[in-house]
Image: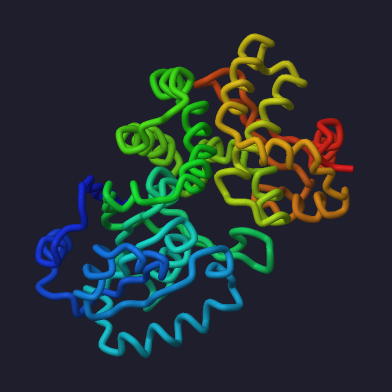
Length: 349
């Protein structure tokens, strides 16, 4: 597994410093793929115009559409006709969808070019920019086509991350609490004891916790990395069907996983109640009300579930249960059993 270098910076580096970090004499072999919304930040708008090759995109799941991908590739090839595949690097500047798109693009363009991430949302900074997963969507089914392709470098810029609106911070808490539950120990205690979380100071420990798991199973061959899917099975269905933000959908998926874990007696009552209280404390009132009234039609839920990448020929998939903070259990369950539990919990009718 290629090692990714991490840089924690207060502000965007100068062009000279950035090129030095990338070991490039000039910016001729760089293409910046960036979220156009970042142009609202005056410092970023000035910074990005200092580089020659720029490709502005509209972030969101539509960016990851397989149907739209060839159009983007045609435009990029026109923009960078003198591409030297040994030196060329794509610099992704944006949130998770921009990173997924750029990572997949880097992995297939000219059979693979360099990749640098500058995540600009809390969610991408703590999770999606690390670990090498890239993906495109097919229709409204998420992440059906992808690759494992690690970035050469990841730059975490505190001044940009702090400019994110509160809604994006709330969304990031889904992945944050997921990592806290998986890791246990200090991260979980900190989340338990603090309603207001210092996201910048938490980033190094969150990334370290995730990468410890990734290094044990970088290409998802032995199944260990699947524990990072905690909350994602149901979370992805909610996200795909109702266009909910990823992190908020994962939070709802965590609630589902926790309640099923308690139903199957994997977790005792005291630990269950404490963990449920923690999740609900960080879940918005609007999202909780949405979840309580969800009642997704059975056919829609099952159709989305059968698109899950972890599904086997026998319609079984690895589901991640919770025994306690730091003690996670991966179990093969039948799709029908999962749907029956969704009916029992009142989110499917």
